[in-house]
Length: 368
Image 1 (tube, rainbow, N blue to C red):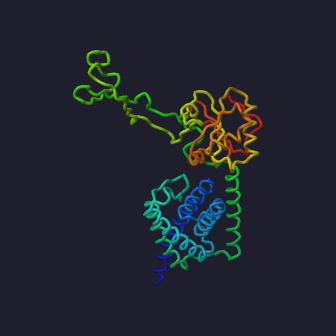
Image 2: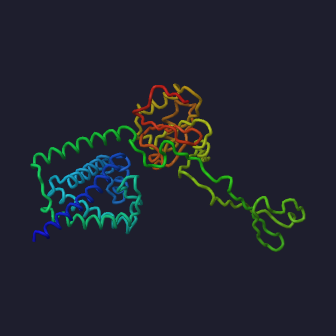
């Protein structure tokens, strides 16, 4: 009997450390970017048609992250193990069901279980949860085999200290840019498209007499043969872009639908972009501060505003800035670009040089 208990104690120890580490890691990477988690929560609420809760997405995300962190720390440090093991079991049961339907119906393409740090498919997420819920069941069943040395009051005090410190950490990341950027537009990333010199252009011709259609790799076709050209009719072109390596999916257009993505993102000079995914919810003081910064730039730079809002709203908001170019892009991609509304992204020769939350916009900026 004693030998069996010793084996169970070892198993519980291993399970505590594994499950606790997973919960802590998951909470920390989400706590680095709480707004990103809020966007995922919003996706789920809309998928299940719980529209009345959408406005509380950030609060729900923060609560979820704090609970996850609390449970992870409690397991890892063997604090309030009875409640912690029950909490882990309940939360894993809930998310296993949610992720099953998510994988089956593809309600949300990315669960955001580990934020943007680790990407899993919906089925990978479900299988991961199956493993965790089995561990959670064993932990709950054998929770008495984990000895606790601290008093109940001491355990609670330790948990409160961890939660308080982690809350301050999240508060900073909400009110400034995340301390770590796991997303595509992180500082130092070269966003220029590669392989443009290898794009192949094919021209398509049809024989006027036989209706035969031929395709030629431009310029390797008989364009200098007037006799040949008189018998063939030009139909069009085909581009083979398989050699292109695009660093992002952002498409930036003006009010007429003209594509300015390359001009703004791959500008060989310094490009300063004021980003506002949604002008309805934009921080007005932050926007005014961003626009004022344009007048206090020390150095040569190009300026533009990119928003995910409508043409009419943008025209109304920026009507007093007649010299400012305003462009339009998908609001979801702009939210991924910078976690701030508004925010500033500075690129130099297509490389992300600096990103600024609206609360961190200086009065003057020097461009080296």
